Length: 261
Ligand SMILES: N[C@@H]1[C@@H](O)[C@H](O)[C@@H](COP(=O)(O)O)O[C@@H]1O
Image 1 (tube, rainbow, N blue to C red):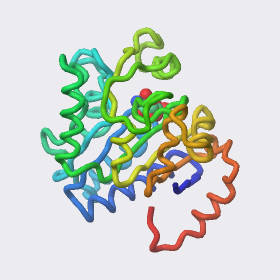
Image 2 (image 1 turned 135 degrees about the vertical axis):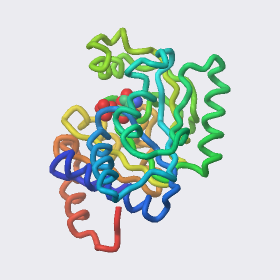
Image 3 (image 1 turned 30 degrees about the horizontal axis):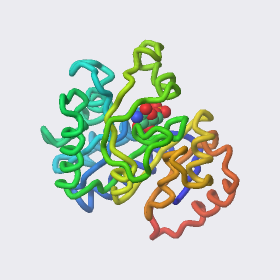
């Protein structure tokens, strides 16, 4: 796992946008894995800026979202399909039907989850997966206790996650859906490059487990320690509980030019 500690979210967004830009330059039809939540927003803004400056096109790219709430109306502003369109995909040039997400309105949930796995596999798998992390260590919506071998399925959100996400639902944790569909940990691990962004003191404990803790379903993001190409970008607050922070800074500062993220 490569750990990069940078001064702030803006700086991190620039580095992550470079990873997207390099990939799309090499492979215009790349398959991108998109995350919702506030952590990736600065990245999306930077990608939109580069798109507007004619540096990046998504015209041949495809995208798969990580997760979706169950039971929100199609036009609900917090439905992740609508969130990602507002935050990113609707602001750039993805072709129609190139952006996919689990179907939180499906009547046959197991079939919808299996179809989503098939769609990802059918696209050739995800090349670059952007991730945030929940304060309880979840990635996508894989809450503590999630099987490290899990695939797309329905999950029940923890009270902590509903409290964290209440800010998007008028401050009321009870207005946050109890259920979601989420890519499993094994689904996420199948992506060829994982890039996780975490900022702020609220992420310090989860980041401490993610980077330096033992791999455990109790802190689901720790499964990323098994990934051959995982990059974790942190601001100083999110990195504040890392024992080897000085070493990670040194590694990044002395990175050979040819060795990009
Ligand atoms: N399902 C999403 C995750 O994909 C996200 O990474 C996480 C952190 O969100 P934020 O970036 O807003 O802190 O929680 C949400 O519930």
